[in-house]
Image 1 (cartoon, rainbow, N blue to C red):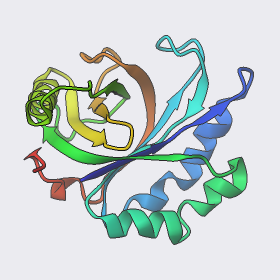
Image 2 (image 1 turned 30 degrees about the horizontal axis):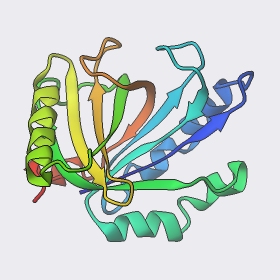
Image 3 (image 1 turned 30 degrees about the vertical axis):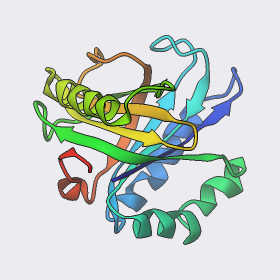
Image 4 (image 1 turned 45 degrees about the vertical axis):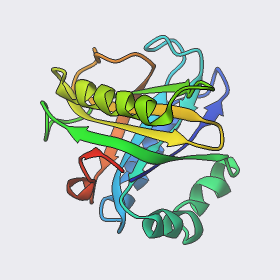
Length: 194
């Protein structure tokens, strides 16, 4: 599993209905993308869920590097770059993935928590803790799925979770889910990713 996200931070007075409309028009285009586990079309609106910014920030879980590269180089990503400029794309290597509780429910919100991997920690133990936290999140009432991944260039761990209601039981940045494309969600390997 590979995780990926880019963020478009928009002006404070930006009409976020433009983003809602865009996702309504194009969100379905990845509903059958080969190699994609799932893409959550995410948005933060200034003043909602404590967000200080307006932001469009889709989050991806990929089954294959080929699927991810096909999206980035093969045209799927080009339209966004043409409309908003090419954003920096963050990538993380999978640590854990779990589904439990509200499987099949509509995801309403997502929570993303990024944290540094501290210098001097035993990496295996730190990652096992991340696996345990992923399982805990996925087991909470209202959870749709949970994942953890690490960026070894920045030594940053990201926890990502989807929730069926607007009161997630996770800490981090809260996003509204506008659409979920999940053509290969059933092929995402559960549990520890190594």
